[in-house]
Length: 178
Ligand code: GDP
Ligand code: MG
Image (cartoon, rainbow, N blue to C red; front, side):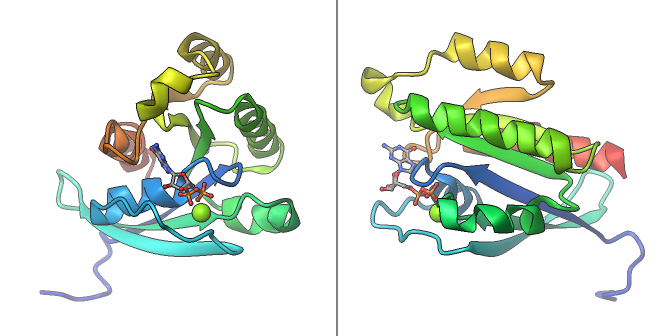
């Protein structure tokens, strides 16, 4: 039966926030399509992808993944994307202390204006560039703990920890939250 009105079907909105160039679009592409495209285009405004998953209890959840643009000129639009979001993935680039600061700005913004129950994950991306690391894992871990967030370092390039972000730290929590 493919009835679209199955009452067990759920929807959850998930948003990615972070500075331009940290790899948000590549993370989404890696997770949803299993690909990495080094020539990927800059996101304008925001783009949207959906991923439908069957949870263990066979509940179907349609995840609406909003990939936002980090540019200043779109900052005023951000509330449209994180409003009503069940989860936020706040991304920085481990080679860029500036992007880590920007991530902290987004965390504060979500704490002030987001859904109070929002699941927040702090992601340090481009972990494959560890030789050029400028944000220590320990600093990020401490910051995440203080702010009740899970912290993970990922690489969209090598796929390292990408599934963990969603499948370990977001989807199971959303399931129990409904
Ligand atoms: P966004 O602006 O946050 O969406 O960033 P993009 O996903 O467009 O990525 C920006 C740039 O970083 C692109 O040139 C990507 O190829 C590169 N990039 C993204 N993720 C990684 C990663 O994990 N490792 C490396 N080395 N480069 C990455
Ligand atoms: Mg993008």
